[in-house]
Length: 159
Image (cartoon, rainbow, N blue to C red; front, side, top):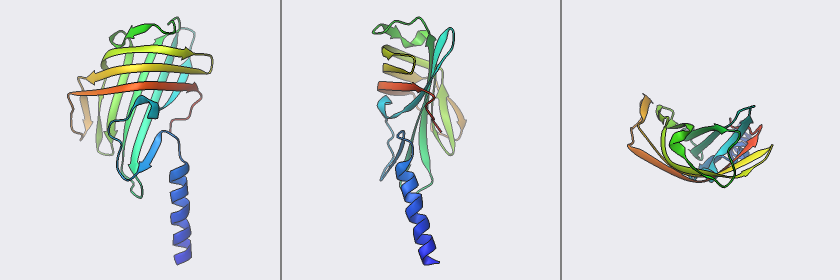
């Protein structure tokens, strides 16, 4: 019985370590992640690109976690290396945990599409999110700033 429990703990630990690259496991939470830590899926339609991204942080050996989501939709005719005003685009951001989340469609700042192909899109983002609504029980924040390069790939598995 002790061997079975030990084997279970080892396998569970390996699964935690092998998980998605945008799932963090450590001795403390990452509460202010750079966009480079997010995993992102890219969807292309006839008229727009849509990026859906996710980051999750856990403490090793515990089931609690915190997460962030960021979604961005922009027209297919966007040019690379063009500085764009984030307030002109469809953006959604959320930060939460098991008890609830805060979310918003309001962002200020800018972004630049630095790479765009049929399989991948990299965007340099400098954003400030505000005007949050609360879902469930979560501490409201006035502004959350997120920066960094987010790379989204076609058929990337977020969850």
